[in-house]
Each structure stands twice: as structure tokens, then as C-alpha cells.
Image (cartoon, rainbow, N blue to C red; front, side, top):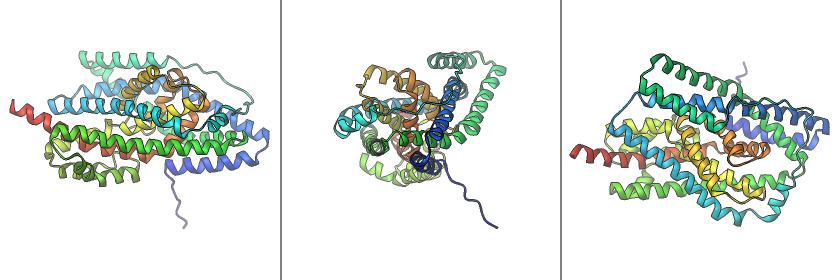
Length: 389
């Protein structure tokens, strides 16, 4: 009996890219327009669902975190928020410094010259609310539920998160490989696929190098505060980093990460709280990928980076990223609205960004997992001071 081979999401994305490129060379115009129609329909569906995804994830995260308290938990959460915000600004600074030298003018010209095929028809499905409205509503409702201890509404919010997880897992994720296939076919038919692949590889390399540099900076700060050798501590997390890179999952890396963190001299009770919590809310790697890719897309479209808009994007995505873990694809799905409304990326640019983001899924997971040790060392120092007071 032949055993079925089940491909992971990254493998399916890479396969979809390859098939899409091949299809772009051999399909006639009617086939390309058919795929473009499918791509446009999926884009419309994603835009419609994004506000619901943001509300479901953020409101539930506030309700769930409101159930716990304690100095150690508060310190961990605060450090995670600081790390995700800092990673965004670190990636923004690196991108603004590096990309003008590595993205040549000819590549930018090829990018700007892209003329996507026209779909046969379009269907307009306006989203129920705007991105910022959904985020503000999620925060207000979440805080109100926690403050009033409204148990029935609390359950509704948590059930809403389950529905969002179902939408992403059963609708968005299965559609993504086909969506990317259609997009790559259209780009290939436009005659600029070689230039675009060069840009894709550049974005992946820059994102990976920036994530490594951020980990070094993170351990230098944490090591100085905790009075530990930062490079020795970072090397001590190598097994967790490689596990995150291979599995593309922070959750799957918890056992190895826990062992590595304890090896840094962090007490067991601190490590056993910090590591599982960070595995669910610390997504610095995802933030770095988003910012690096978004900055590249902005520059390749002939615009300059608006640091004010990027700052708003970083804070909006910090709130979403911290709420999104546990829902595969939650971060990139919820970012699509902000990419369009805040950074003014076109649907085609957002689609290309999504492709690159998903293709280097392990890079983000490895960076996030690698940072667990730095956060644990800082929490250890903070709790030691609190116990002595």
C-alpha cells in the first residue's frame, strides 16, 4: 500500500511558486486571466476577513492574560512587548541602511514596469469595519470583559477566537498555495520573473542577517543587565535556534528551549514560566520579516520609506503579533490590512510579501526561539530583586 506524503506549508508554498512560474510560461492569455480572477477573489476574501481576525485574536488575548497575575508574568509580558517593538525598529533601521545599496535601480525599474493581467470580473465585498476600528474595538471589549468579570461575554470572546482559528486553518491556509501559484503565474507572464526572484532572495538574506544581528544585540542588552556573558549565553541557545529553524515552530521547540535556558543558570521556576509563555507571545522574528519585506516592497515601488507610517505599522502589528500565536498563519493574515491601509502597498505587493514571508518561516521561528534565553535572564534578574525587597 502506497503511503501518502504530506507536505508542510513551506514545501507547498515553494512547490506552488515553481508550478506558478512554469504555468506563466506555457499558459495562454485566457489561462493567466482565469488565474488572475481567482487571485483577485481570494484577495477580496482576505480583506473581508482581516478585521474579524484582528478582533478575535486581540480581544481573546486580553481576556486570557487578564486571568493571570504576578510579578514574573508581568515582567515577562513587558519584556516581550519591548522586544517585539524593538525588533521592528531594528529591522526598519537596518532595511533603510542596507536596501538602497543592494536593490539596484534596474531592479526597481523592472518592479515598477510590472503590468498585472486583468481578471475577467471582480466582486466587491467591503469589510465590516476598518483595521484600526477592529483593533480599538478588540482592546476596549477585552479590557471591559476583564474589568467587569463578564463571564458570559468572556466565553463569547474566547469562542470568537476559536472561529477565527477555524477560518484561518480551514479557509485561508488551504487557499494560500493556490493563491501564490496564481500570483507567480501572472508575474511570470509579465516578463519580470527573474528580477523578482532576485528581489525575493535579497529580502530573505537581509531578513535572516537582520534577525541574527538582533539576537546579538538582544543578548548584549540582557547580558549586561543580568551580568552574564552575552555571547556565551547566545551560544548556549544554539540547539533551540536550530530546532526552531528546522521545525518552523516555537511551540515544537519548547523542550529544547527549556533545557537550553536552564543551562544558562536560570532557575527552573522562572524557565518553566518564561519559555512556554514566550513560545506563544514572543514573535520578534515575525516582526523582523514583516518590516524587512515591507521596506523592500516600498523601495522597489519607487517610494521612500515613511518612518512615521512604519512606526504606526510596528505598533499595530505588535498588538496583533502578541495575540496571534497559537493560530497558524495568524500574523501574516492579520497584517494584510495594515500593509494596505498604513503602508499603502498594492494587493500585488502584499501578495508577494506574503510569499516571501511564508517561504522563510523557519527564519522567524528561530529568531523568536533564540530570544527566549535573553528574556529569561532578564526576568530572573528582575524577580531576584523583587524577592530581596
